[in-house]
Image (tube, rainbow, N blue to C red; front, side):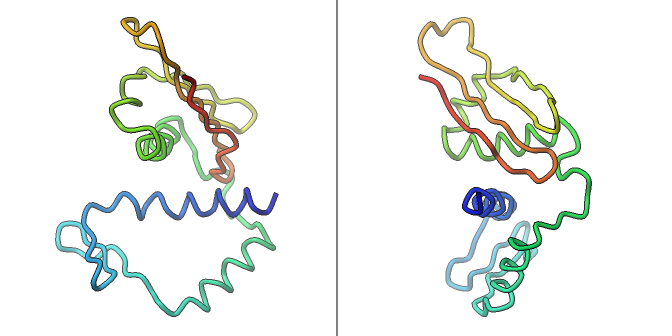
Length: 138
C-alpha cells in the first residue's frame, strides 16, 4: 500500500515538472518564456522530512484534488501521452469518462476505420489523484 501511495505522490509531483518546455541541465533550472519555474535543490534533507511526514499523516486539506472531468482528462493525457505517445492517444478521442464513487474512469474509443487494436483505460481518484489502474489493450 505504501509503495502505491509513493508512486501516486510521485506522479502528482512529476506532472508539473514534465510539462516544462525548456530545461537548463547545467544549472538544473527550468524556464518557460525566460521566467524561472523551478530549480532543483541539492540540499534534500527538508524534502525528505516532508515526504516522511506526508506518508505517515496522509494529509490532504481539500475534499478533492481533481474537481472536474476537464482536469481529470488533462492529467490523464499528460500521463498517457508520455507512456503511449500523443498521436496514439489522440486517435482515441472522444474519450469516455464516468465519475463513480470519487473516481474518474476514462477510456479511449476505437476509431471506426481501425479494426485491430485496443484503447487505454485509466482510473484516477478525485480525492488524492492516485492512479489506481492504467492499461492499454492491444
